[in-house]
Image 1 (cartoon, helix red, strand yellow):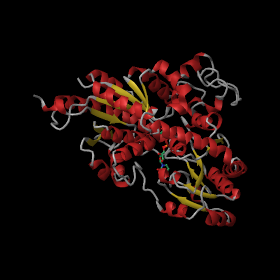
Image 2 (tube, helix red, strand yellow):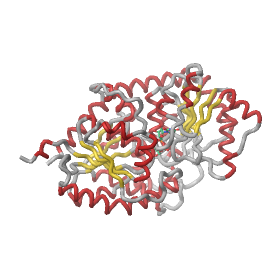
Image 3 (spheres, protein in one colour):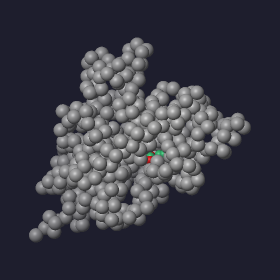
Image 4 (cartoon, protein in one colour):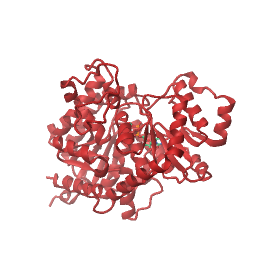
Length: 481
Ligand code: UDX
């Protein structure tokens, strides 16, 4: 008898090679390994090196005998992207480089030259890499997409053709506060300024806009769609998405889901960080010395950049608020030599007294720290979920892409904080920090606690995300022929 018939299903996971995407998809990889599946994680050599160096993934993943990394043969221009432009450059380069490699990989996997694993039985590809769809269909391997953004962002991308048909895109007129009528389920609160940043262009023929549009329209062609969200958070939008993508698996918040399943299996792990940059853990010791819920954590994720002026406005606002703050300033986040600028004596003094700055933080641990009372964030989806899980209210300063719509949901729909989009002045920063940490603290903390409880419920046995992950694993198992 063929001994391979006894082997578990083999999933190839193919993320877009940037922090926010790798982070979520590597957590999924670990969850599938815990569920008994074999996983190959396809990544660029640079990201692979960084994961080994900074996230210590080698020792973490050694315990999963069915897991392995597979590197694309060459480094791509754009590296680990730290700006929207480089992100697009990386996307185009990946499309060229990955196609032949992926095809060869799947074909040779079919030939079955690895006795310890089956040929790939299912692909889980990043939802912006439809290149994998064409190849999967050619070689006859089932494919599921994983979109690393929120359901609300995905749905707004999906509805773009309707916005164009109705004449709502391109945006005409200057009234960015006018309501958008053609994103079903969001009538009544979605303003033009809340649409994904790609919509803020006059020429809809541009490459970036077309890419987002085309990639999203491919989604229903896959066997299923995985979203890192939970039913209680986005139920009305999820029911809209199900009209186009009925096989929908909501299995988030993934970082917390992974922790829960590790606990269940009594697997102790000091960290499940998938950081591509060196974390400065000294901030945790600084937090240990601060009173409960007294610190606002400030971080704008892995891609957002700001001008030197914007940085100064944030700095003044934070110091003027009189609140304690922990601020992540990535070395490359303020381009230009002015990024090195120093503050006035007053700013330096206020920072020394109440602030702490690092280049990159162990964010999940920071948000879980009892000293944290608020999060000034760019509204990246991982950051938003990490904040929701810990019941930390947010001030949102979205930078690009999905972040514009995430922040609208945080402020207007979920009432988990304030949306500061399109504004960056010291007076507003000071006012919002004071509202979040003081004046409206009880109000926001109450809704944040309620949502954190719903997130936890979804991850407990029988909860929606818990059951959906089991269903995903079952469905992947049924794909084995
Ligand atoms: C962007 C998008 O906005 C996001 O929604 C999409 O899914 C991926 O691309 P990014 O800017 O990376 O993401 O933000 P976010 O999704 O919040 O991910 C950042 C990750 O880096 C988070 O998991 C966060 O914990 C981690 N991080 C951030 C750190 O570990 N340390 C830091 O100092 C800052």
